[in-house]
Every structure is written in structure tokens, then in C-alpha cells.
Image 1 (spheres, each protein chain N blue to C red):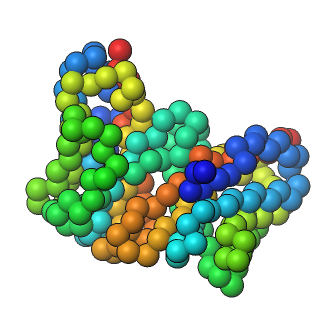
Image 2: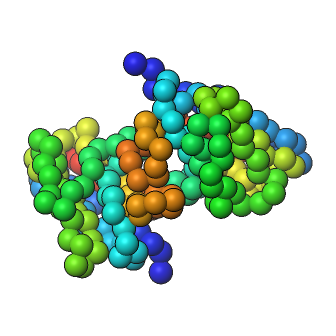
Length: 110
Length: 115
């Protein structure tokens, strides 16, 4: 079982739609959680950190469920510019590298 | 301010050649990471430096891979006797803290193609 699993998609949604991605992680000792965005042939860029209480940044909301070991990302009012691959990233406190999921591809269609 | 830079952006190597990939982290960033990203996959960890010390090289796939950061700033990833399976994008990331579990900022990557 991979440490971080995501539905690869693609998710094809119309502009203005709300879309949600889930990610599950296997290591119960995980302490830090992030969503990164990666455009085609570009580097990953930090979208947001994910906190236990959940957090919101504009149209983006991230939630963490430690009991079920999953993280979600909700995008409201999708824009064409949201089309990208979204990477779920998990870290364990201490000397352990961050683990990246394979990513979920989103295409927002006009 | 300036972000993480990497050079070259693209590299084509014949099988068996040695290559050297360079990373300039964000100024003052303590931690530097190298990742390998194959097509359709997420980045996979290769190695980690805290200043000039290489604290973790557990992700390096073979002893043909070698990384250094002699002055705690610029880092070089060297691949000796390249093989076709080394073809990937090599990403460098840096972080302001001395731990793994903090936001990392990525460079644009070097796309290596081994023919």
C-alpha cells in the first residue's frame, strides 16, 4: 500500500463548479500535511498547509481527519486557471522525508 | 525575492555519460532537498542537506547518484554512468527550517533524458 494515495482523476468540471479531492495516508504518526499544485511541466507550488482545525484560503478549503487518516481539498467556484495537478503531501515529525501522492488532475472547462 | 533556481533546465545524455545538475536554493535557507519525478508520478525523495551536512541519502536509487553541498548553499546532484531509467525531472527544494516537516519551495527542475 502506498503511503499517500490519491484518485488520479482526471476530474473534468465546468467553470463555477465545486470540486473535492480526497487523499489517504497510511502512517498514523504523520504530523504535517500540505496541498501542492503542479501545472503541466512546472514545479510543485505550495497551495496550503492543512491544520487539524481545517483551514480556508479564499475559494480553497482543506480539512484533516486524523481518525480516518484522510485529507481533503475543496475548491469552490472553479476557474479555468485552477486546472492543474493537485499533490497531497504528508510528513512525519522528525527525520523523515515528506511523502508526495501521485496527484489528482483537474481540468476546468469553459 | 529570488526563488530556487536550477540548471540546466534540460539535459540530454547518452547512456553511460556522467551528468551534474545544479541547484541554487533561496538565500538563507538551511534545508535543501533533491527529488526525482517520473512522468505521472509525484516527486520521490532522494536526499536532504541541512547546511553542508547530508543528513539523509536514503532515497538515492544507486551508488551512481551522488550529491554535495560543500558550502551550505549551492548543491550539485551528480549521476554517473547514466541509464535510461534515470530519465526524469530532478527537482530541488529548499526550506527555511532545519526539519523535513515544513513548507518546501521548489525550483523549476532539470528534465534529464538519457538516450
